[in-house]
Amino acid sequence: MMRLPRFRYLAPASLPEAVKVLGDLGPEAMPLAGGTDLVPNMKRRQQTPANLVGLRGLAALRAVSGDAGRGLTLGAMTRLAEVERGPVAAGWPALARAAATVATPPIRNTATLGGNLCLDTRCSYYDQGEEWRRSIGYCMKREGETCWVAPGSDRCWAVSSSDTAPVLCALGAEVTLLSRGGERRIPVAELFADDGIRHLSRRPDELLTAVHLPPVEAGQRAAYVKLRRRGSFDFPVLGVAARVRLSAGGTVEAARIFLGAVGSRPQEARAAADFLVGRRLGDEEVIREAARLAAQVAKPMQNTDLTLGWRKGVAREYAARALRELVG
Amino acid sequence: MEAPLVTLQSGPREKLRLAFAVNGEERELLVEPYKTLLEVLREDLGLTGTKHGCELGECGACAVLLDGELALSCLVPAVECGGRAVTTIEGLRDGPELHPLQAAFADHGAAQCGYCTPGMIVAARWLLDRKPDATRQEIADALAGQLCRCTGYQQIYEAVESAGRVLRGLPPLPPVVAAVHGEEPHGR
Image (cartoon, rainbow over all chains, first blue to last red):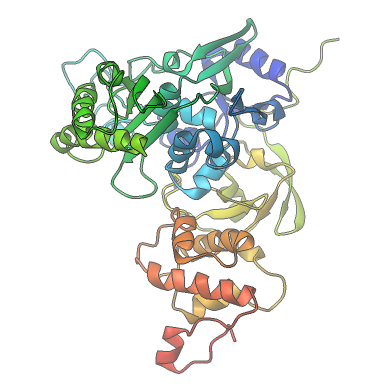
Protein backbone atom coordinates (compact mmCIF):
# COMPACT_ATOMS: atom_id res chain seq x y z
CA MET A 1 0.00 0.00 0.00
CA MET A 2 1.20 3.50 -0.85
CA ARG A 3 0.98 6.02 1.95
CA LEU A 4 1.73 9.70 1.65
CA PRO A 5 5.18 10.73 2.86
CA ARG A 6 5.17 12.76 6.07
CA PHE A 7 4.72 16.51 5.81
CA ARG A 8 3.79 19.44 7.97
CA TYR A 9 0.23 20.59 7.32
CA LEU A 10 -0.71 24.24 7.54
CA ALA A 11 -4.18 25.67 7.08
CA PRO A 12 -4.08 29.45 6.81
CA ALA A 13 -7.37 31.23 7.51
CA SER A 14 -6.85 34.16 5.14
CA LEU A 15 -5.06 35.03 1.90
CA PRO A 16 -2.52 37.30 3.68
CA GLU A 17 -1.72 34.39 6.01
CA ALA A 18 -1.40 32.03 3.08
CA VAL A 19 1.07 34.18 1.16
CA LYS A 20 3.03 34.92 4.34
CA VAL A 21 3.45 31.18 4.88
CA LEU A 22 4.42 30.61 1.23
CA GLY A 23 6.85 33.53 1.43
CA ASP A 24 8.44 32.20 4.61
CA LEU A 25 8.74 28.60 3.44
CA GLY A 26 9.54 29.23 -0.25
CA PRO A 27 10.30 26.05 -2.21
CA GLU A 28 9.84 23.97 0.98
CA ALA A 29 6.07 24.39 0.70
CA MET A 30 3.42 23.61 -1.88
CA PRO A 31 -0.15 24.88 -1.92
CA LEU A 32 -2.77 22.10 -1.66
CA ALA A 33 -5.98 22.81 -3.60
CA GLY A 34 -8.03 19.80 -4.72
CA GLY A 35 -5.01 17.52 -4.36
CA THR A 36 -6.00 15.22 -7.23
CA ASP A 37 -2.63 15.74 -8.98
CA LEU A 38 -0.38 16.42 -6.00
CA VAL A 39 -1.59 13.57 -3.74
CA PRO A 40 -0.89 10.75 -6.24
CA ASN A 41 2.45 12.37 -7.10
CA MET A 42 3.35 12.49 -3.42
CA LYS A 43 2.35 8.85 -2.95
CA ARG A 44 4.75 7.94 -5.75
CA ARG A 45 7.39 10.27 -4.23
CA GLN A 46 7.53 12.35 -7.41
CA GLN A 47 6.82 15.45 -5.34
CA THR A 48 7.71 15.47 -1.63
CA PRO A 49 7.12 18.94 -0.19
CA ALA A 50 8.02 19.21 3.50
CA ASN A 51 5.02 21.51 4.02
CA LEU A 52 1.54 21.50 2.52
CA VAL A 53 -0.46 24.70 2.71
CA GLY A 54 -4.12 23.69 2.62
CA LEU A 55 -6.26 26.27 0.84
CA ARG A 56 -9.66 24.82 1.78
CA GLY A 57 -10.48 27.51 4.32
CA LEU A 58 -9.97 30.41 1.91
CA ALA A 59 -13.44 31.35 0.71
CA ALA A 60 -11.98 34.18 -1.40
CA LEU A 61 -10.50 31.53 -3.71
CA ARG A 62 -14.00 30.21 -4.52
CA ALA A 63 -15.57 33.52 -5.51
CA VAL A 64 -17.00 33.87 -9.02
CA SER A 65 -17.95 37.30 -10.38
CA GLY A 66 -18.82 38.98 -13.66
CA ASP A 67 -20.65 37.82 -16.78
CA ALA A 68 -20.18 37.32 -20.52
CA GLY A 69 -20.43 41.05 -21.20
CA ARG A 70 -17.91 42.18 -18.58
CA GLY A 71 -15.75 39.10 -18.42
CA LEU A 72 -15.71 36.50 -15.67
CA THR A 73 -13.34 36.11 -12.74
CA LEU A 74 -13.13 32.60 -11.32
CA GLY A 75 -11.46 31.99 -7.99
CA ALA A 76 -8.60 29.53 -8.45
CA MET A 77 -10.36 27.01 -6.17
CA THR A 78 -13.43 26.87 -8.43
CA ARG A 79 -13.95 23.16 -8.92
CA LEU A 80 -13.84 21.75 -12.46
CA ALA A 81 -17.39 20.41 -11.97
CA GLU A 82 -18.49 24.03 -11.53
CA VAL A 83 -16.51 25.16 -14.59
CA GLU A 84 -18.48 22.58 -16.61
CA ARG A 85 -21.76 24.34 -15.79
CA GLY A 86 -23.13 27.76 -14.91
CA PRO A 87 -21.77 31.01 -16.32
CA VAL A 88 -18.75 29.36 -17.95
CA ALA A 89 -20.94 26.94 -19.92
CA ALA A 90 -23.20 29.82 -20.98
CA GLY A 91 -20.48 32.22 -22.15
CA TRP A 92 -17.36 30.13 -22.77
CA PRO A 93 -18.61 26.65 -23.75
CA ALA A 94 -15.19 25.55 -25.05
CA LEU A 95 -13.75 25.98 -21.55
CA ALA A 96 -16.71 24.15 -20.01
CA ARG A 97 -16.11 21.33 -22.48
CA ALA A 98 -12.41 21.16 -21.66
CA ALA A 99 -13.22 20.97 -17.94
CA ALA A 100 -15.80 18.25 -18.61
CA THR A 101 -13.18 16.10 -20.35
CA VAL A 102 -10.77 16.11 -17.38
CA ALA A 103 -10.36 12.74 -15.64
CA THR A 104 -13.60 11.44 -14.06
CA PRO A 105 -16.70 12.80 -12.26
CA PRO A 106 -15.38 12.33 -8.69
CA ILE A 107 -12.09 13.97 -9.64
CA ARG A 108 -13.84 16.92 -11.29
CA ASN A 109 -15.87 17.32 -8.08
CA THR A 110 -12.59 17.80 -6.19
CA ALA A 111 -10.05 19.20 -8.67
CA THR A 112 -9.82 22.95 -9.13
CA LEU A 113 -9.27 25.24 -12.12
CA GLY A 114 -6.10 26.72 -10.61
CA GLY A 115 -4.84 23.22 -9.90
CA ASN A 116 -5.48 22.12 -13.48
CA LEU A 117 -3.38 25.06 -14.69
CA CYS A 118 -0.57 24.21 -12.26
CA LEU A 119 -0.71 20.47 -13.05
CA ASP A 120 2.71 18.86 -12.88
CA THR A 121 4.08 17.94 -16.31
CA ARG A 122 3.79 14.27 -17.18
CA CYS A 123 6.06 11.65 -18.75
CA SER A 124 5.98 7.87 -18.95
CA TYR A 125 9.45 7.78 -17.29
CA TYR A 126 8.29 10.04 -14.44
CA ASP A 127 4.71 9.01 -13.65
CA GLN A 128 5.78 5.76 -12.05
CA GLY A 129 6.23 4.42 -8.56
CA GLU A 130 9.40 5.14 -6.61
CA GLU A 131 10.79 1.62 -7.07
CA TRP A 132 10.25 1.70 -10.84
CA ARG A 133 11.99 5.05 -11.16
CA ARG A 134 14.87 3.92 -8.94
CA SER A 135 15.34 0.85 -11.16
CA ILE A 136 16.20 3.08 -14.14
CA GLY A 137 18.36 5.43 -12.09
CA TYR A 138 15.55 7.99 -11.93
CA CYS A 139 15.32 10.76 -14.54
CA MET A 140 16.32 14.37 -14.94
CA LYS A 141 12.98 15.66 -13.64
CA ARG A 142 13.46 14.07 -10.25
CA GLU A 143 16.71 12.85 -8.64
CA GLY A 144 18.34 11.57 -11.86
CA GLU A 145 20.60 12.98 -14.56
CA THR A 146 19.23 11.60 -17.79
CA CYS A 147 16.15 12.37 -19.84
CA TRP A 148 15.17 8.85 -20.91
CA VAL A 149 12.96 10.17 -23.71
CA ALA A 150 15.91 11.95 -25.32
CA PRO A 151 19.08 10.71 -23.58
CA GLY A 152 21.31 13.27 -25.29
CA SER A 153 19.08 16.11 -24.23
CA ASP A 154 20.05 18.72 -21.67
CA ARG A 155 16.41 19.51 -20.96
CA CYS A 156 13.37 17.64 -19.64
CA TRP A 157 10.62 16.89 -22.14
CA ALA A 158 7.78 16.13 -19.72
CA VAL A 159 4.41 17.11 -21.16
CA SER A 160 1.94 19.83 -20.23
CA SER A 161 -1.23 17.74 -19.78
CA SER A 162 -3.82 20.31 -18.74
CA ASP A 163 -7.06 20.38 -20.72
CA THR A 164 -8.07 23.86 -19.57
CA ALA A 165 -4.68 25.51 -20.24
CA PRO A 166 -4.79 25.51 -24.08
CA VAL A 167 -8.37 26.81 -24.04
CA LEU A 168 -7.56 29.58 -21.57
CA CYS A 169 -4.54 30.53 -23.72
CA ALA A 170 -6.70 30.63 -26.86
CA LEU A 171 -9.35 32.72 -25.09
CA GLY A 172 -6.70 35.23 -23.99
CA ALA A 173 -7.48 34.64 -20.30
CA GLU A 174 -5.29 35.96 -17.50
CA VAL A 175 -4.32 34.80 -14.01
CA THR A 176 -3.58 36.70 -10.82
CA LEU A 177 -0.50 35.66 -8.83
CA LEU A 178 -0.44 36.95 -5.25
CA SER A 179 2.58 37.16 -2.98
CA ARG A 180 3.62 39.10 0.10
CA GLY A 181 5.06 41.73 -2.20
CA GLY A 182 1.76 42.33 -4.00
CA GLU A 183 0.01 40.84 -6.96
CA ARG A 184 0.64 40.59 -10.68
CA ARG A 185 -1.74 39.72 -13.47
CA ILE A 186 -0.35 37.91 -16.51
CA PRO A 187 -1.76 36.19 -19.60
CA VAL A 188 -2.28 32.47 -18.99
CA ALA A 189 0.12 31.77 -21.89
CA GLU A 190 2.88 33.50 -19.89
CA LEU A 191 2.26 31.24 -16.88
CA PHE A 192 3.98 28.44 -18.79
CA ALA A 193 7.62 27.90 -19.75
CA ASP A 194 9.00 25.46 -22.33
CA ASP A 195 10.72 23.23 -19.79
CA GLY A 196 9.40 19.99 -18.31
CA ILE A 197 10.92 20.76 -14.89
CA ARG A 198 10.44 24.53 -14.48
CA HIS A 199 7.19 24.58 -16.40
CA LEU A 200 5.49 27.40 -14.48
CA SER A 201 6.54 31.02 -14.20
CA ARG A 202 4.79 31.07 -10.80
CA ARG A 203 7.38 31.62 -8.08
CA PRO A 204 7.22 29.34 -5.00
CA ASP A 205 6.14 32.32 -2.87
CA GLU A 206 3.24 33.11 -5.20
CA LEU A 207 -0.30 31.82 -5.01
CA LEU A 208 -2.43 31.61 -8.14
CA THR A 209 -5.63 33.21 -6.83
CA ALA A 210 -7.90 33.83 -9.83
CA VAL A 211 -8.49 33.20 -13.52
CA HIS A 212 -9.93 36.05 -15.58
CA LEU A 213 -11.93 35.32 -18.75
CA PRO A 214 -12.15 38.29 -21.11
CA PRO A 215 -15.60 39.54 -22.21
CA VAL A 216 -17.24 37.51 -24.98
CA GLU A 217 -16.96 39.49 -28.22
CA ALA A 218 -19.57 39.58 -30.98
CA GLY A 219 -18.78 36.83 -33.47
CA GLN A 220 -16.62 34.92 -30.98
CA ARG A 221 -16.43 31.17 -31.40
CA ALA A 222 -14.20 28.72 -29.61
CA ALA A 223 -13.71 24.96 -29.59
CA TYR A 224 -11.69 22.29 -27.80
CA VAL A 225 -11.15 18.73 -28.99
CA LYS A 226 -9.24 16.12 -27.03
CA LEU A 227 -7.50 12.92 -28.09
CA ARG A 228 -7.07 10.12 -25.55
CA ARG A 229 -7.34 6.35 -25.43
CA ARG A 230 -10.50 6.09 -23.30
CA GLY A 231 -13.54 8.36 -23.14
CA SER A 232 -12.88 8.99 -19.44
CA PHE A 233 -9.95 8.99 -16.96
CA ASP A 234 -7.17 9.74 -19.43
CA PHE A 235 -5.03 12.83 -19.70
CA PRO A 236 -4.93 14.32 -23.19
CA VAL A 237 -2.51 12.87 -25.71
CA LEU A 238 -3.40 15.91 -27.81
CA GLY A 239 -5.75 18.82 -27.18
CA VAL A 240 -6.61 21.44 -29.78
CA ALA A 241 -8.09 24.75 -28.65
CA ALA A 242 -9.14 27.36 -31.19
CA ARG A 243 -10.79 30.73 -30.78
CA VAL A 244 -11.87 33.05 -33.61
CA ARG A 245 -13.83 36.25 -34.04
CA LEU A 246 -15.97 36.23 -37.17
CA SER A 247 -17.32 39.26 -39.02
CA ALA A 248 -21.05 39.49 -39.75
CA GLY A 249 -20.19 38.12 -43.19
CA GLY A 250 -18.38 35.09 -41.75
CA THR A 251 -14.80 36.20 -42.40
CA VAL A 252 -12.22 35.48 -39.70
CA GLU A 253 -11.14 38.76 -38.09
CA ALA A 254 -8.97 37.32 -35.32
CA ALA A 255 -7.77 33.80 -34.46
CA ARG A 256 -5.75 32.03 -31.80
CA ILE A 257 -4.92 28.31 -31.76
CA PHE A 258 -3.08 26.38 -29.04
CA LEU A 259 -2.15 22.70 -28.96
CA GLY A 260 -1.97 20.92 -25.62
CA ALA A 261 -0.06 17.77 -24.57
CA VAL A 262 2.48 17.97 -27.42
CA GLY A 263 5.10 19.98 -25.54
CA SER A 264 6.11 21.09 -22.07
CA ARG A 265 3.70 24.02 -22.38
CA PRO A 266 0.65 24.72 -24.59
CA GLN A 267 2.04 25.31 -28.08
CA GLU A 268 0.76 28.31 -30.00
CA ALA A 269 0.03 27.70 -33.69
CA ARG A 270 0.59 31.26 -34.82
CA ALA A 271 1.11 30.58 -38.54
CA ALA A 272 -2.19 28.71 -38.69
CA ALA A 273 -4.01 31.52 -36.88
CA ASP A 274 -2.45 34.19 -39.13
CA PHE A 275 -3.43 32.19 -42.20
CA LEU A 276 -7.08 32.13 -41.08
CA VAL A 277 -7.41 35.89 -40.71
CA GLY A 278 -9.26 37.38 -43.69
CA ARG A 279 -10.47 33.96 -44.86
CA ARG A 280 -13.77 32.15 -44.50
CA LEU A 281 -13.97 29.08 -42.26
CA GLY A 282 -16.72 27.48 -44.31
CA ASP A 283 -14.16 26.67 -47.03
CA GLU A 284 -12.82 23.14 -46.40
CA GLU A 285 -9.60 24.02 -48.28
CA VAL A 286 -8.98 26.81 -45.76
CA ILE A 287 -9.52 24.43 -42.86
CA ARG A 288 -7.16 21.84 -44.36
CA GLU A 289 -4.37 24.34 -44.89
CA ALA A 290 -4.79 25.89 -41.41
CA ALA A 291 -4.81 22.40 -39.87
CA ARG A 292 -1.61 21.50 -41.76
CA LEU A 293 0.07 24.64 -40.39
CA ALA A 294 -1.26 24.03 -36.86
CA ALA A 295 0.04 20.46 -36.80
CA GLN A 296 3.57 21.74 -37.49
CA VAL A 297 3.87 23.02 -33.92
CA ALA A 298 3.03 19.57 -32.50
CA LYS A 299 6.36 18.04 -31.50
CA PRO A 300 5.28 14.94 -29.61
CA MET A 301 7.89 12.71 -27.97
CA GLN A 302 7.67 9.02 -27.13
CA ASN A 303 6.63 9.71 -23.52
CA THR A 304 2.83 9.53 -23.46
CA ASP A 305 0.17 6.99 -24.34
CA LEU A 306 -0.28 5.89 -28.01
CA THR A 307 2.44 5.58 -30.64
CA LEU A 308 4.55 8.50 -31.75
CA GLY A 309 4.09 8.18 -35.50
CA TRP A 310 0.35 7.95 -35.22
CA ARG A 311 0.18 10.90 -32.82
CA LYS A 312 2.16 13.03 -35.29
CA GLY A 313 -0.13 12.07 -38.13
CA VAL A 314 -3.37 12.60 -36.24
CA ALA A 315 -2.53 16.14 -35.10
CA ARG A 316 -3.60 17.58 -38.46
CA GLU A 317 -6.92 15.74 -38.35
CA TYR A 318 -7.66 16.92 -34.81
CA ALA A 319 -6.80 20.51 -35.68
CA ALA A 320 -9.22 20.27 -38.61
CA ARG A 321 -11.94 18.91 -36.31
CA ALA A 322 -11.54 21.82 -33.93
CA LEU A 323 -11.72 24.33 -36.79
CA ARG A 324 -14.79 22.63 -38.29
CA GLU A 325 -16.53 23.01 -34.93
CA LEU A 326 -16.06 26.76 -35.25
CA VAL A 327 -18.10 26.82 -38.46
CA GLY A 328 -21.21 25.70 -36.57
CA MET B 1 1.14 41.11 19.78
CA GLU B 2 1.13 39.66 16.29
CA ALA B 3 -1.72 37.34 15.40
CA PRO B 4 -0.79 33.65 15.09
CA LEU B 5 0.74 32.81 11.73
CA VAL B 6 -1.70 30.08 10.88
CA THR B 7 -4.88 28.92 12.45
CA LEU B 8 -4.06 25.25 12.23
CA GLN B 9 -0.79 23.49 11.76
CA SER B 10 1.00 20.32 12.68
CA GLY B 11 4.55 19.05 12.78
CA PRO B 12 5.26 16.11 10.47
CA ARG B 13 4.85 13.65 13.38
CA GLU B 14 2.07 15.39 15.27
CA LYS B 15 -1.55 14.48 15.07
CA LEU B 16 -4.31 16.95 14.40
CA ARG B 17 -7.80 16.91 15.82
CA LEU B 18 -10.40 15.97 13.23
CA ALA B 19 -14.10 16.45 13.93
CA PHE B 20 -16.49 15.48 11.19
CA ALA B 21 -19.73 13.62 10.53
CA VAL B 22 -19.49 10.07 9.23
CA ASN B 23 -22.76 8.51 8.11
CA GLY B 24 -24.68 11.01 10.22
CA GLU B 25 -22.67 10.41 13.38
CA GLU B 26 -20.35 13.08 14.82
CA ARG B 27 -16.85 11.64 15.14
CA GLU B 28 -13.79 13.18 16.71
CA LEU B 29 -10.30 11.74 16.55
CA LEU B 30 -6.63 12.56 16.23
CA VAL B 31 -5.12 11.88 12.81
CA GLU B 32 -1.68 12.07 11.26
CA PRO B 33 -1.60 14.63 8.43
CA TYR B 34 -0.29 12.04 5.97
CA LYS B 35 -3.36 9.83 6.34
CA THR B 36 -5.96 9.98 3.60
CA LEU B 37 -9.67 9.94 4.33
CA LEU B 38 -9.70 6.35 3.03
CA GLU B 39 -7.05 5.29 5.55
CA VAL B 40 -8.87 6.98 8.44
CA LEU B 41 -12.21 5.44 7.48
CA ARG B 42 -10.77 1.93 7.24
CA GLU B 43 -8.03 1.95 9.87
CA ASP B 44 -9.23 4.39 12.53
CA LEU B 45 -12.99 4.07 12.21
CA GLY B 46 -13.21 0.42 11.12
CA LEU B 47 -15.39 1.21 8.12
CA THR B 48 -13.91 -1.28 5.68
CA GLY B 49 -16.75 -1.16 3.17
CA THR B 50 -14.87 1.53 1.25
CA LYS B 51 -12.17 -0.22 -0.76
CA HIS B 52 -8.51 0.41 -1.43
CA GLY B 53 -8.04 0.09 -5.17
CA CYS B 54 -5.32 1.86 -7.12
CA GLU B 55 -4.78 4.51 -4.40
CA LEU B 56 -4.02 7.03 -7.16
CA GLY B 57 -7.46 8.20 -8.31
CA GLU B 58 -7.57 5.87 -11.31
CA CYS B 59 -10.22 3.32 -10.33
CA GLY B 60 -13.04 4.74 -8.14
CA ALA B 61 -13.14 1.86 -5.63
CA CYS B 62 -12.70 4.30 -2.71
CA ALA B 63 -15.57 6.63 -3.68
CA VAL B 64 -17.55 8.27 -0.87
CA LEU B 65 -19.88 11.24 -0.67
CA LEU B 66 -18.16 14.31 0.77
CA ASP B 67 -20.74 16.96 1.63
CA GLY B 68 -23.04 15.12 -0.76
CA GLU B 69 -20.59 15.19 -3.68
CA LEU B 70 -18.94 12.09 -5.12
CA ALA B 71 -15.25 12.15 -4.16
CA LEU B 72 -12.29 9.77 -4.02
CA SER B 73 -11.30 9.16 -0.41
CA CYS B 74 -7.80 7.99 -1.44
CA LEU B 75 -6.97 11.50 -2.70
CA VAL B 76 -8.26 13.58 0.21
CA PRO B 77 -6.00 14.15 3.23
CA ALA B 78 -8.23 13.42 6.24
CA VAL B 79 -7.16 16.65 7.95
CA GLU B 80 -8.95 18.52 5.17
CA CYS B 81 -12.28 16.96 6.18
CA GLY B 82 -12.90 18.92 9.40
CA GLY B 83 -16.54 20.01 9.71
CA ARG B 84 -17.58 18.05 6.63
CA ALA B 85 -20.09 15.23 6.18
CA VAL B 86 -18.91 11.88 4.80
CA THR B 87 -21.25 9.14 3.59
CA THR B 88 -19.77 5.70 2.96
CA ILE B 89 -21.37 2.52 1.68
CA GLU B 90 -22.17 1.64 5.31
CA GLY B 91 -24.26 4.79 5.62
CA LEU B 92 -26.36 4.21 2.53
CA ARG B 93 -29.39 3.46 4.67
CA ASP B 94 -30.34 3.22 8.36
CA GLY B 95 -31.98 0.06 9.64
CA PRO B 96 -32.33 -3.44 8.24
CA GLU B 97 -33.99 -2.56 4.90
CA LEU B 98 -31.80 -2.58 1.79
CA HIS B 99 -31.43 0.67 -0.13
CA PRO B 100 -33.11 0.24 -3.55
CA LEU B 101 -29.64 0.34 -5.11
CA GLN B 102 -28.42 -2.53 -2.92
CA ALA B 103 -31.51 -4.59 -3.75
CA ALA B 104 -31.16 -3.85 -7.45
CA PHE B 105 -27.44 -4.73 -7.49
CA ALA B 106 -28.31 -8.10 -5.93
CA ASP B 107 -31.26 -8.78 -8.21
CA HIS B 108 -29.50 -7.80 -11.43
CA GLY B 109 -26.23 -9.60 -10.76
CA ALA B 110 -24.48 -6.26 -10.79
CA ALA B 111 -21.70 -7.49 -8.50
CA GLN B 112 -19.27 -10.09 -9.81
CA CYS B 113 -16.06 -10.10 -7.78
CA GLY B 114 -17.66 -7.25 -5.82
CA TYR B 115 -14.56 -5.13 -5.29
CA CYS B 116 -15.87 -2.14 -7.25
CA THR B 117 -19.40 -2.49 -5.86
CA PRO B 118 -19.24 -0.09 -2.87
CA GLY B 119 -17.81 2.65 -5.09
CA MET B 120 -20.31 1.89 -7.83
CA ILE B 121 -23.27 2.06 -5.45
CA VAL B 122 -22.05 5.28 -3.82
CA ALA B 123 -21.54 6.84 -7.27
CA ALA B 124 -24.98 5.66 -8.38
CA ARG B 125 -26.50 7.09 -5.19
CA TRP B 126 -24.84 10.46 -6.00
CA LEU B 127 -26.52 10.38 -9.41
CA LEU B 128 -29.97 9.17 -8.29
CA ASP B 129 -30.08 11.71 -5.43
CA ARG B 130 -30.08 14.35 -8.16
CA LYS B 131 -31.74 12.54 -11.00
CA PRO B 132 -33.73 9.39 -10.17
CA ASP B 133 -34.94 9.30 -13.79
CA ALA B 134 -31.42 9.33 -15.24
CA THR B 135 -31.14 7.88 -18.74
CA ARG B 136 -28.78 5.02 -19.59
CA GLN B 137 -26.32 7.55 -21.04
CA GLU B 138 -26.49 9.73 -17.92
CA ILE B 139 -25.87 6.64 -15.79
CA ALA B 140 -22.84 5.72 -17.91
CA ASP B 141 -21.51 9.28 -17.67
CA ALA B 142 -21.97 9.44 -13.89
CA LEU B 143 -20.22 6.08 -13.42
CA ALA B 144 -17.41 6.97 -15.84
CA GLY B 145 -14.96 7.20 -12.93
CA GLN B 146 -15.68 3.70 -11.57
CA LEU B 147 -13.79 0.79 -13.06
CA CYS B 148 -15.23 -2.74 -12.96
CA ARG B 149 -12.41 -5.07 -13.99
CA CYS B 150 -14.89 -7.92 -14.33
CA THR B 151 -16.37 -5.60 -17.00
CA GLY B 152 -19.92 -6.18 -15.81
CA TYR B 153 -21.13 -2.72 -16.78
CA GLN B 154 -24.34 -3.83 -18.49
CA GLN B 155 -25.82 -5.32 -15.31
CA ILE B 156 -24.61 -2.36 -13.28
CA TYR B 157 -26.39 0.10 -15.59
CA GLU B 158 -29.55 -2.04 -15.46
CA ALA B 159 -29.43 -2.14 -11.66
CA VAL B 160 -29.06 1.64 -11.39
CA GLU B 161 -31.91 2.15 -13.84
CA SER B 162 -34.08 -0.27 -11.87
CA ALA B 163 -33.24 1.39 -8.52
CA GLY B 164 -34.13 4.75 -10.03
CA ARG B 165 -37.54 3.36 -10.95
CA VAL B 166 -38.10 2.09 -7.40
CA LEU B 167 -37.10 5.49 -5.99
CA ARG B 168 -39.72 7.06 -8.29
CA GLY B 169 -42.42 4.66 -7.03
CA LEU B 170 -42.37 2.49 -10.17
CA PRO B 171 -41.91 -1.30 -10.25
CA PRO B 172 -38.30 -2.47 -10.69
CA LEU B 173 -37.03 -3.74 -14.03
CA PRO B 174 -37.35 -7.53 -14.45
CA PRO B 175 -34.22 -8.95 -12.82
CA VAL B 176 -32.63 -11.21 -15.40
CA VAL B 177 -30.59 -13.24 -12.91
CA ALA B 178 -33.51 -13.89 -10.57
CA ALA B 179 -35.61 -15.02 -13.53
CA VAL B 180 -32.98 -17.60 -14.44
CA HIS B 181 -32.61 -18.91 -10.92
CA GLY B 182 -36.25 -18.60 -9.91
CA GLU B 183 -35.41 -16.38 -6.94
CA GLU B 184 -37.68 -13.82 -5.34
CA PRO B 185 -36.28 -10.37 -6.14
CA HIS B 186 -35.50 -7.99 -3.26
CA GLY B 187 -36.80 -4.94 -5.08
CA ARG B 188 -40.47 -5.96 -5.05
